[in-house]
Length: 150
Image (cartoon, rainbow, N blue to C red; front, side, top):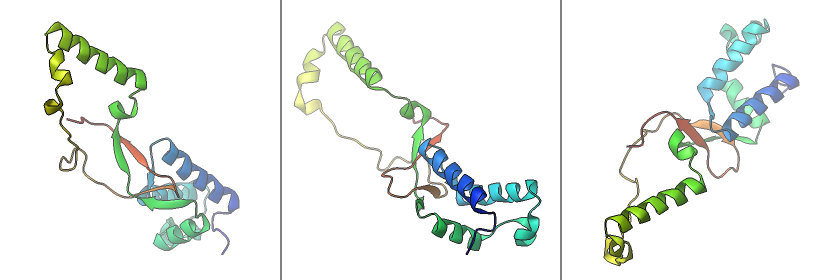
């Protein structure tokens, strides 16, 4: 079926969803439905949807019309982690080396018994939220959040 909002508006919505996903601010289904409701009000098209707002049927058909968008579980990424650069990491290692040399701890860096492996498997630093809409086939969909990683 033809899009209720017209091809131009559908294309705009698709580009908005995909653009925000690429920038790390993916849209939830609720966000999309609320935005469409606002667009419908601004364009005086309330008669297009019952109660002036789109429902899950519209959302399902929108996603079918745009197979490049899929529902995904986002990976939370804090601002600090998102802005880390290679030079930042290299500088950190240089500071650790300088500290070890200054405090006569260089041998610690060469001792394989002092190497530990740890991940965040059981540390829920940022609880899961709502699934988001992202680009189909994209390996990871990141969602930036304000907060402390500690």
